[in-house]
Length: 226
Image (cartoon, rainbow, N blue to C red; front, side, top):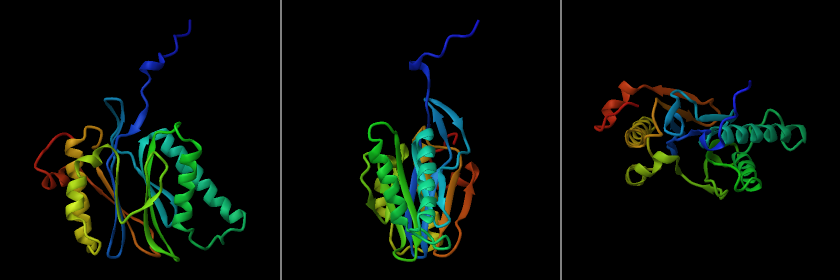
């Protein structure tokens, strides 16, 4: 005898209950996120990578439903590849960041009300240099120098507004980002795990840096299990 199907009201959706943070600094762009995903009140994955590659020069930070954000990233990447097949750009040329961001925006608008997601798309190109685009769930695309996303971002908005500067050195920006993400992870139950930071500079591949719980304790006096 086959078991009864699960009650729809008890099925939990995996979410990137998240803190994402992207900002420009003097030499490029820095993207940071925690690594925790959740199923309701349960931690389902402690080491999820929420910084997703769209092209060699473009990445996005994902927050919201894991299934939705992964599907959207796959669809956007597919359309970016079609641009080459359709002759809109040469294969050796890096794609435009705004082109990628507008694809995400169009997907959000075409599926309005059916997806639970927010994105921050960032990268560099040879036309406009470094760029950061925030895309909340309502599908309104906004270019910003500094963008936050996810449930943990509300805890650090004031701190980031006060401390961020457009001309930060790379080392200062790294310390600033680690502090901000640590503060958010200490207060937001859905953010935790490790800190994943990606550094992008023009004509260079992204550098990924992972910071463990023990390395983060000095950035935040309020301690809990990350």
